[in-house]
Amino acid sequence: MTDGCWTKVTVTTGPEAVEAVAGILMTAGAGGIEIVDPRIWERAAEKDHYGELYPEVEPVLPGTPVKVIGYLAGDCRRAPILADVEERVLDLKELGLDAAPAKVAAELVRESDWAENWKKFYHPRRVGERVVIKPRWEEYEARSGDIVVELDPGMAFGTGEHETTRLCLVQLEKRLQPGWVVYDVGTGSGILALAAAKLGADRVEACDLDPVAAAAARENVMYNGLEGKISVQVGTIEALRGKAQLILANIITDVIVDILPQVVQRLVDGGLFITSGIICERRDEVVEALEAAGLKLLEEDKEAEWVCLVSRK
Image (cartoon, rainbow, N blue to C red; front, side, top):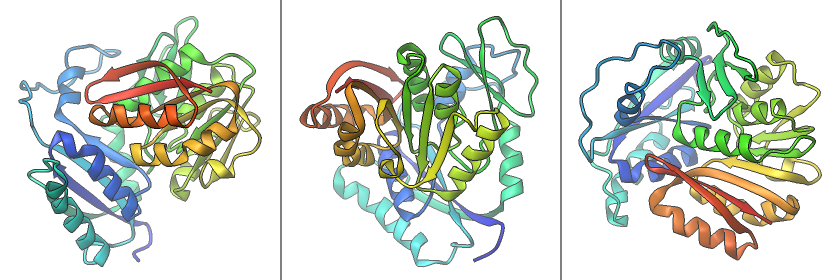
């Protein structure tokens, strides 16, 4: 292993295979996933966010490839794990998913270089009515009523730029009641946990299987002065204590379905479960699993290819 370095694995795939590819990378050990979809730039260029300048973009054709990026610790460029990723991506065709062009590339990057690259594209962004996600290195003049979450994602997923994060933030702002206990499962950078605390949660219990993500979340908790409200554990939902009025899980479909028994067990009666990371094609599968677990679907929201589901115990 090369200290201070990561292997950046980039899979160029079709839009319908994005979630499956993300699952392959996470199984390989990537703690968080970055999705580079040209449709994001196309939508962003239609709006002005705090005077940001976006590059000129051409209309994106249906089926335009998406890049799914994961970071593996150390130098894995010649490791068996990378060959396994390539094989599993190619096998998606047999499962009926169009993963073309299904290209896998790997390069070695240093943590400092990775972190600096984020800063070129990451700017203050309003999500919902009051929540503003502000990078630590950016200036922002808060308006009356703004809830400003200051963030440095480090090597973790969760910047507010991806549709699934925005969908969860909008529902969190809409649903959270002051004084509630909130769980954030798969916290990544801690963005949802931070927003929950600033929106009035009494206590937030966050967890992530990736120790790098957990460390990034803890640093963001300290930077926002919320050590007394938010705790971050390395692990799954089973690492969290007590019960919650609201559980957040912005992860991937297979993991969401797997943890549903624990979600129901850890929710108080009448508690809410807000979940995303679900590609639209698998929406029905998750809804069926929610209902089978004893949760009632209250609302769903959609952005691009992603859906967010809100259910009640």
